[in-house]
Length: 622
Image (cartoon, rainbow, N blue to C red; front, top):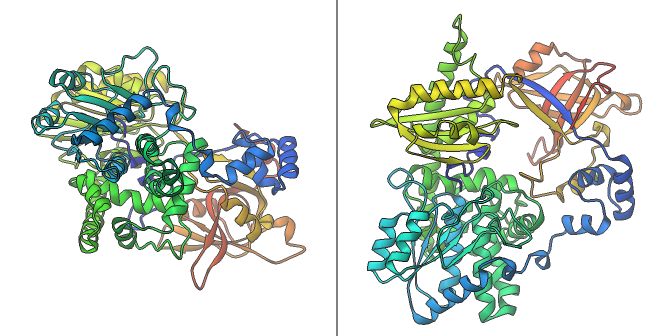
């Protein structure tokens, strides 16, 4: 997790709409069609015997050879890289092996999000399998904040710990690394956060981070849990390489897959292998805690093929809820216990905390929406005129302000920072839009903060509340300078053209092989032009629409239609004055509805507009 506390906030904010949430006016949506590659796609389709549209999607991902396509669509354990390729691995594995053989307790210092807690579980399990003794510490989000703490290291040393391994944290822990050196603690840092060119690294016995200078590890975008997995694999293979490869490693991929999907790292390369094989293993959850968590989330992997969506929107938010609302260490207990009753109790608590998180978020979001609506009625709106929004409130729960910032970006298409003020301290979390480096904006106000961090799209900070007015003025000026030529708009990135009459169960089956979908391997959005409404739009719950659509070119040959659903699009469809017989262009995702009565293929509308004869030639391309 980044210092901004971004974990899954962006993903959680992109769930399907809550029917109770107001339907705000949408910003302008601009369709951007990916540049087609007809010759390369045709060549790949023939060589690999793939549907043309799937070949087009693969070419857009840089896959042009049949062998590459086969490896992408059929990941195997053999595609994982050797952990010994990672700089520092030999030193880290040797010291950990020594601690186990000498009976020295090892302290694992994690983070409170999905990535950090699953990383602790992975290393804890490996060390205990080898007969070692493990302690762990996961900081409390509100009381301790993000990162390594010197006080915890001092306590651990006093209790006999001589080796500390960080997971998903540590690359900025310079003072804490010096504390460890002064005490005589060996420190191994495992982290994945990016370094700027020329940045120093903390003093440690070993650092495992593919992004550090001099590291030749091929996959640079592993999440924290995947790096912990590599250390676990390296140590286990020293003891029994065959069993590790055939039995232990596939089992460990379950936790690594959950973290890889939840942390929104690019789902390509080695990450795709981890996520795909881990999802496959999750269909047979052997662990007591995993089974309890699936039950709490009403997921039965034995009857439903798990997808990245299931992990990102049903499993990960429940795990994250512990760190957002309470104590994340209970996640580690859940995945470690063999007591079915205790596992059920802990999973039920995560379910309750996730409901609390949603309720807490909803209260604050309603206040933010009311403020935006009231501002829009002003003769000279303040928020409406700003190109970067800073919205503060008293006592908003710090565990949800990142999600709230994502909600504001979703509504306004502007960079947004949500600030919670409590006891004279302002804690902020921000999210950005394409093309605007939010961390750069925050760095221009560095003198106002007691601490801050993050990256281009997500930031977090703390500051005296009295500095808030100055922050708003300076960020507004910065945004005016750097966003002056841009109007707020949502970009709808369309990956390929696909008429509705070409959607078949066979094609849907081929497209499923792109799973798991996510950052770096996006779910395909297609466009169909000249589509006719077979019936009048049907409004659901005053916000959503149901449509029956037919490809105009196919009407003469067939009366078959395709069901479509449009979440939050009732107002937009009404504004277009769509009726039976209207011709439209539709941007959509393919869905397979498993409803017993209405099941089958349908499309989920991502965008809809009136058809124009020249629309095919006016489409913007990447």
